[in-house]
View 1 (cartoon, one colour):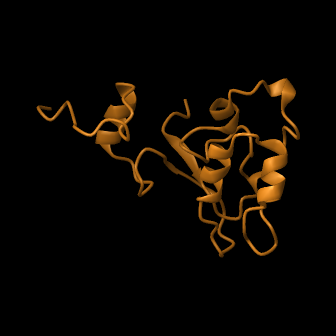
View 2: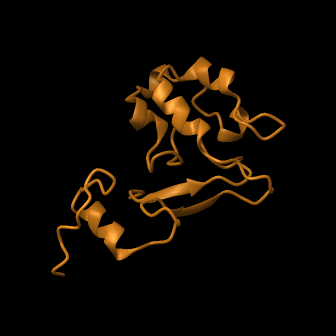
Length: 123
């Protein structure tokens, strides 16, 4: 039901660190293939991994995530300086806007980043 939808980071207080889609249009439980029972701090929010200076707390991330590739992806996510609320957006387009093209990619289970040509141009 939530395929294609992700959170856009605002104040980060509403986003579940483990269970909400906020990185790579996926949640961390799926990305890391973790079992819910083994999660450290299962109800932690994304905000708890951000310093008061609004930077990622990498040492704290490293305590709960062993995969350096995922930590690098998180580190690459910009942290807004404003206190806007977290918002939902379309996660399959960089703009966050819904497009029929990206919805078609999703419907056909095609990874648009891995496939360069659009096989359905005839539509």
